[in-house]
Image 1 (cartoon, rainbow, N blue to C red):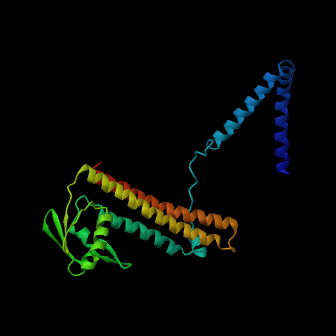
Image 2: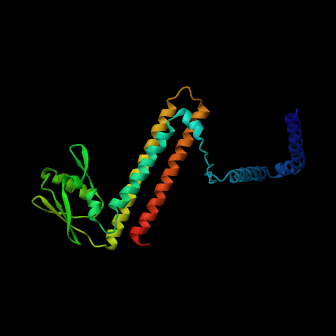
Image 3: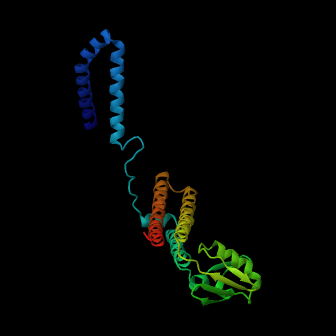
Amino acid sequence: MLRNTLHLASLGVRQARVANFLPGFTQLLQKQPLKAASQQIARDYAKSKDKKREKGGKGGGGKAAKVEINEQQLREILNFDGLNSQMQKNLLQMKEDFVKHLSLRSTSGAIDTLRIKVDGQEHELQELAQISRKNPKTIIVNMIGFPQTIPDVLKAIEKSGMNLNPQQDGTTLFIPIPKVTKEHRENLSKNAKALFVKYRDAIRGVQNEHIRKLKNKPELGKDDAFAAQAQVTAIADRFISEADKLLASKQKELLGD
């Protein structure tokens, strides 16, 4: 009843507007039909633009609505702890890699824990070699215990992002520690960004994996599935936001800003 009353009231307002507008428009239409038509088109276009502006513009420039995380709801339909732990693991691994591989001064400690892939398995370099310092500017890596892994070690050092250029003499590697130049700082900053992208994509991978599982739950209603997917994405966004802050801090440290 109330809805019908409001509709009739609204209709009455529109009819009043038309009644006020119609005489002048009819007179103009009889004298200058093209001008009358163009004026009406202009009015309609202006109204359309105003409506779009009220909604946040053509591109929907308004801020996206914040997604609230309903932990209890998510626990009922997916492995919530597993989701969080997988994303958290990637964030912590990124932190660890930043510390180990993106130091302005490459240290023997960073070399000690360098991961070496041998026959499909990973080992720390200190498990395969004796590591020492000849002087403050040179690290010595004695590979006499596992000389067959030297190519794997050289490959890992090259990909470490520490800007090291080892020299091999038999089963011994001599690693000069590079000077901290502007170019070295910029290279480390690029390596930090590459690590960020790697772990950001890994977090998105976890997100997409859980969303696929949600889509394969026929018992889950369409609205519930959509809400759960939005929450999973929001959780991933939080971890990526933390990773982005770590990247900004590390790059500031490396570049001396």
